[in-house]
Amino acid sequence: MAGPLTASDLASLRTRLDALARELGFDQVGVAGVDLAADEARLERWLAEGRHGGMDYMARHGRRRSRPATLVPGTLRVISVRMAAWAPDAAPADGVLADGSKGYVARYALGRDYHKVLRSRLAVLAKRLETEFGAFGHRAFVDSAPVMEKPLARDAGLGWIGKHTNLINERAGSSFMLGELFTDLPLPVDAPAKDRCGSCSACLPACPTGAITAPYQLDARRCISYLTIEHHGSIPEALRPAIGNRIFGCDDCQLVCPWNKFAQAAALPDFRVRHRLDEPDLVELFGWNESEYLEKTRGSALARLGFGRWLRNLAVALGNAPRSPRAAAALQARADDADPVVREHVGWALERQGGNS
View 1: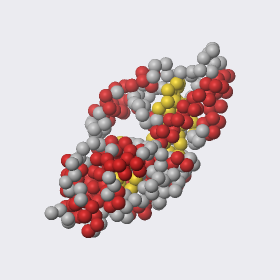
View 2: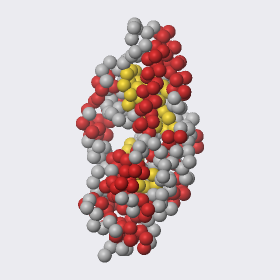
View 3: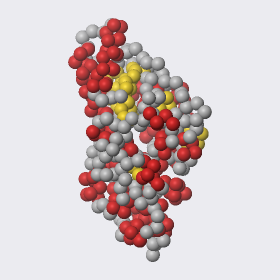
View 4: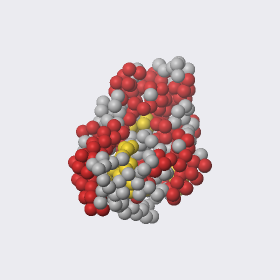
């Protein structure tokens, strides 16, 4: 930067930031400070209680997660953005969840991987600001580093953290994804969003596995999104029936949230449904070989599972599906799978289908 920006320069940059963010497809942008002391204390209690399950990285990074200037030295502000990411052309979620022969994929994961979409646009946003105002220190993140994205988004005015622990915006519900740009610019900060959940607690009983143990408290070890995406190894048998046909993530706590009457479908074509995975036939998916899996999930969030966990999740869903010779035959074909985790889940599912010989 040629010289320090004046207060007037920073105010102009903040105004320009709104316009550039809209041009790049972001639905909202805000600026937060870096004091997350209260959130740090809550995070450390949550970790001490073991509620992070197997996500050891959450503890491994220590306080870098809650102290942006420790993660990226020199950080003074965090620019937070949100972008609608739920597939606009997806089959109605309720209908898919009610049909046990189909698989349910979280609606944000049906198109291109949101990490790629938001990160590339954040890079362009930073470049455009540098072109107009001069070079400055910055680093972009999209759920890719130890960043407390929801508290930062709250402090930037993008929404409040609801009782289900997702961010809620009064004009857009919770059907969006977040990204951050850490910066050394002392930009004026926005007012934090106020909690507007009120007396509503619809999300608590809606959770199939009881993962929302109290308002604003989530036990990841019981969360279907954690179990089907983050968790490696065997899914606890006691939780498998409640997973139903959810093969990647879960939206139940958001589907019942009254604020999602304002939810906005994604405007970008990147998030349109790929390979009709919004209401796929479970038996057909279970019949894919690894090459088909890699081909049909390339560039999407589904690719992060790997073929083994993909089959594990499908086996659970087939075990919960209505009994049918077709489902039993598909499971039997993988009864001797080389992966011991897949093999164990297939055995469980076969017993549920009445086809284990």
